[in-house]
Image 1 (cartoon, one colour):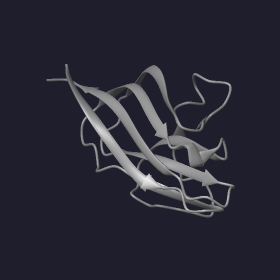
Image 2: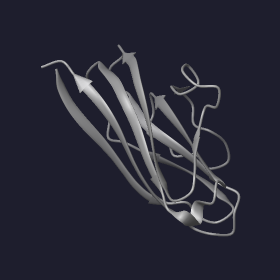
Image 3: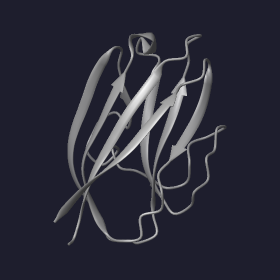
Image 4: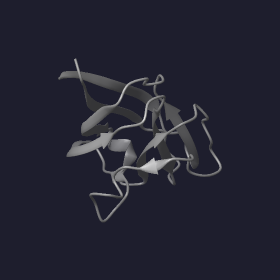
Length: 125
């Protein structure tokens, strides 16, 4: 198995929502972890919802089409924090090909915090 890291670097615009999208993944894979670093300006007002999707769309008005893979393992289907690193170990198998990883980000504050996120996946050699 080969590990790959899908990186997301973005800002959460004040009082707004956004979606960031990975490149297309054309092989089956296993999601091993998601790690998010939110700067202190996030102040627990930024929620990050991770999705597996079949399209590259970047909606802002609502969550993207697809499957929120945290909802399978967690009471809260999002990550949130302030000035800290959050890491969640997973073992979610994605058998379909042609998928995208997405982060749907909501920010209810007047600040514009930076977000660094990584999703680690395993791909068959």
